[in-house]
Each structure stands twice: as C-alpha cells, then as structure tokens.
Length: 492
Image (cartoon, rainbow, N blue to C red):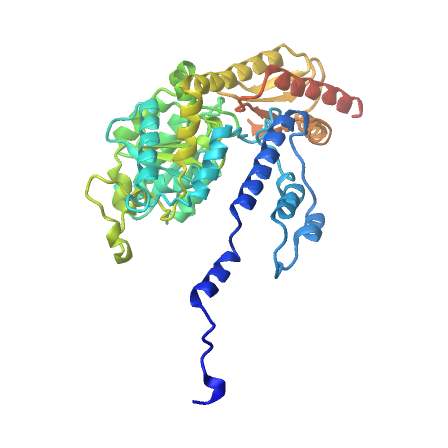
C-alpha cells in the first residue's frame, strides 16, 4: 500500500460528530444566563411600558442601513446579538400591549401566556397529531371544549386552534364549500363591514372573487337582512349556489354585532352555512352582558375567535369551532403514507385533520396556563372592564360640546369625531379636520388611535381590550382630541 493512502488511525468519528454538534450548542450556564437576560428585558419593558409612547418606528432607509447585510460567517456573543435585536428590531413597532394603544385591535398578553410560548418553543412541540404530541393535543381538546361551552354550541361541536382569524375564516369556508357538495358557481355573502380576510378566503377556497357578495349594512353597521334575502333570491334565480353567510360578532371597524338570531333563522330556512366572525368580540360571551349581546352565536355552523385579542394571549392563537366536527375532518383529513404510523385508534384526534396546517405549534398551552394561574373570574372582570370603559367613553363623547359619537359602544369600540357644537362646517372639511386631529394624536400624543369610515364619515376609533387600560388612559385621549381639534379649527 502506498504511504500516502494509509488511513489516519487518529481520526475518531465520535469526536468529530461531537465537534460539529457543539457548534450549535451552548453550555448550560450560558443558556441560563441568556434566558435570564431575556426575562429581565421583558419584565423591565412591562414595568416601563405605561410611561413610554404607544408607538415607535423608523423609516425603511434607516432600517436597511442598520440591518441589510450578509449573514456573518462566524458567530458573536449571544447577549450582544440580543441587545442589537432589542434596539434595532423589537422596540420599533406599535406597542400593542400599551394601556394607551387603542388602534386596530390591540393585544395585552398575560405573563404566564408569554412564558408558555417560551416553554412550548423550548420543548419544540408539534401539535400535529396524537402520536407526535399527545399531551399538547389533549390540552387543545380541553381548551376547545372550554370555548364550546362558553359559546353554548352543541356537544357535536369541535375544532382547532389556528394562527388567527384569517386561517379560521379560510378553514370555515372550505368546510362550507364541502358541506354544500362543492357546487359550481358557489356564492358567499358578507357585510360591507366584514373583515377582508373573508374576501381573501373566498379566493383561496376556489370561489370566484365576484361571487363574494357584499351586502350593505344598515344605519347601525349591521348587515341588512332584507338586502341579503334579495341577493340570495336573485343569485338562485341566476343559477348561482349560495353556500355561506358570514356574520359579524363585533365588526372590526365599529364593534357592531349583526342580528345573529335572525341570520340563523334565515340560513336554516335557506340551507346555507352560517359562519360568525367573532375574532374580536367573541370572548365577551364569558360575561353576562356579552352573552346577551351575542345571543344566537350558539346556532352558528362555524365561529372564529382570536384569543390573542380579547382573551389576553400573545400572538398567534386563533380558533375555529364548527357545529359538527366531522365537517372539518372530511375536507382536511388526508392520510399520506408517510403519516401511516400516526394513526392511534379511533378515539385519538389528529388535529392536523381539521385545518390547513400540518406542523402546528402548541397554542393551547398559553391559554391553559393563563386561566389556571389567574382563574376565570379575573378574565371575566377584565373583559367586562373593556365593556364598561367603552360605555363610559361614549357617555363622555355625548356630553362633550366638541365631540360627536358616530358609532355607539356595542362592545368595546367607539367611533367618534371632533365636531364643535354650533360650528357650521361642511362634511368634507370635517373629514379633513379630523384627519389633522389624527395626525396630531399620532405624532404628539403618547396614545395610539386609528381611524374608520362610518356612514361615509371619517371617524376616530378607539378599541379597548387591554386589561391594564384605565379610565384615565381613555379620558386622556378624548381630552387630547378636543384640544387638538380646537387648535386645528383655529387654523382653518
């Protein structure tokens, strides 16, 4: 044998493998220190949040200069990387959990919910099926059962946790399409106040975009039942096949609740799937007042909920409940051969068979840990507080000579505008005036407010779903609106 072909007997494959593995590992002490630093950053942030502005951001050019770079070939100290992430990424965003964040639909996660996500990530859980995650799967069944009971849906109901309302809407419309027999020229009906996720879901579900039929709303931002009935009749006469009606249980713009009992009657009579979008407002059902407002939701064929909104969880955790769980399992329950080992008896649900995701994070853990830690009384009181603060805001607006309520506080959203009593101002000028007020609020006030259009009028909009928000926070933004409005009016 030639000398240069003699094998190197000093090579140890086990040592080499360990050396490669160690490149992506950290010593236990370093892991604990990094986790401790992260926890300290987050706890400090929560303590300082109320004294900071609700929004911070940066222009794209500045962020590209900071972040657009090739990945490093060699690593660096993890604490330095985390410090840079906090400075250049994490702080430059809308602080959705700020007590003065009233824009869009905010989110205020409990600390046990945050820790639960950390644990679920650390355990690297995949709640796809029973074999891969029996504990997470059972916990999700528990949480789904809680939701079913709160809504009052029948025992045949079931579902799954999703990334959010968009995924829940898509899964629901796929189920509706399949339940109708996948007809040609299928049509879906929704209010002009419905979330755009429904229009997107229609397209993805293979229904023609022009068959997403937009029904006008009435003077209270609720779907017009007479208009809906006419459109369904006209579509049937034209050879179209109505398969679903999407109702709002808390419209995103105004918080309006469609007439759910009447819609349930209509859909039952017409043999149309009845879907209720309760992503924002659905968890109000755990309160006595909310249960009355949402009467009829229990009759839905499907309901979408977002626990990362008014149930105080970190992103992402939505939910879809259907009246008959088999209506999800029939379209989504596929069995490829590479998953043949995952079948574990008929009594063990594989949640991946109920929706579009196969790999799924263990979303139920944060809900379960939060409820177990604080109890339902605390959640109920916190949701009721949002209802109370919105009603109080409406009363303040009605009593103010400078403000006008454009949409009443059905749940926890109030739409209003600056309009001083006795002032003769054209509607177009009023819209422009209130846009100026919104800009002043954005740049000069620590709170964050978004806008909406109500009956063609530009409106300021506050959505109160933070358990840390107080009346002082709400009153401050209403007073700022009055102040900025008066100053803007003087400049006209």
